[in-house]
Image 1: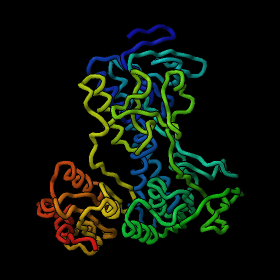
Image 2: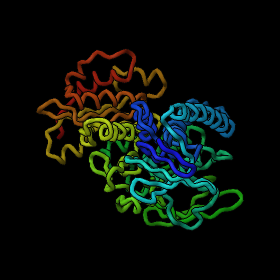
Image 3: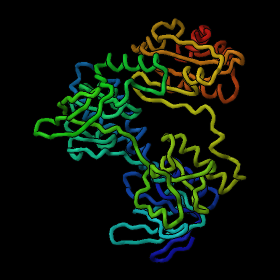
Image 4: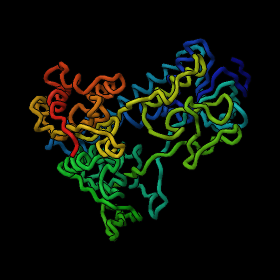
Length: 463
């Protein structure tokens, strides 16, 4: 590593302290390489997941599930936020020292902007630092999308970050958007005691899922007091001292809705604004995502992109796998690629959680597959007592199997512990474990995994 007053030269430069970036930096430093990691905000040391994403929101989800009916919503919310902040502060410090304590890692706080091939200028106040490296990794993540609407800059309008510190607690909340973030926050705030309305721009929830799965999710949400408006869009916000008045269009009709706060859950876009990518010859697509090949190489030689900034599914564990691909390029044989990924599971942390992997029944039928399908309501599964012991036997289990090969094609689990059981099914799909083997497996008792014994015993042809 060479260093002058205003310049720094390292082996690898990582822009952004996300899951993939920090893991890659630590791995390369462990191999003796000199690494510089640039992060614009010290509050984001550790990345989105640790600070504003997965971990803090799931902490709040847990506390919402633990709230008793006689707990005052506002005071309980304040305690939950304090617990969230204490935990995140601890994790951020751990993540900071994970790299700061390595002799071959240089941490730089400031805004990075490319000024040439594999060269960036970092600005922080009046200070400027030029950093160069033969290998550069862009890992700047994504930021919330914000529609251009009248009144959208109201202090009552939040994104998924600011709503985690809403003060006072919003007793009436409108959620604009019915994707994973919108539904998670809707479920969470209903648990905290808010009156929640979800604005879904489509005719039904979860259009990519089978209708029976989507209907069960809606039934559970509505059972928790959440109102779901379909074919609904926000047209504007009007503030008053007491509330926000939302101008809506619902199924072609104008409506108004008075709330205390609004969550814009209208998607996240790659954070590539003002990175100076053109100066480095880095191409982006129409959404601003950095274009990469299956080895995460950009159009600029020696520059890689990983995590949310490259577009596609925005999940921490994919960013983690991205680091393995880039590590393979920089220190291995370069053979690892995104095409290696098979049966990647997802979970939307409703109460109970909704987990998915592989094909839906509709997708399998559209592909002309001869399939068997097993679907059971959780409350009716005799060999699955765990949800009942926890007092939440809601949801369903749905598994799709190839009738000829006994191969598991996909599963949708909507129940207590679904986020764990889906990993077992995903592993079975990746390793060729059959539906019969899962059906006849010996699982701990009482557990949610036991549903596989009974549900897979009910596989039947699709009519």
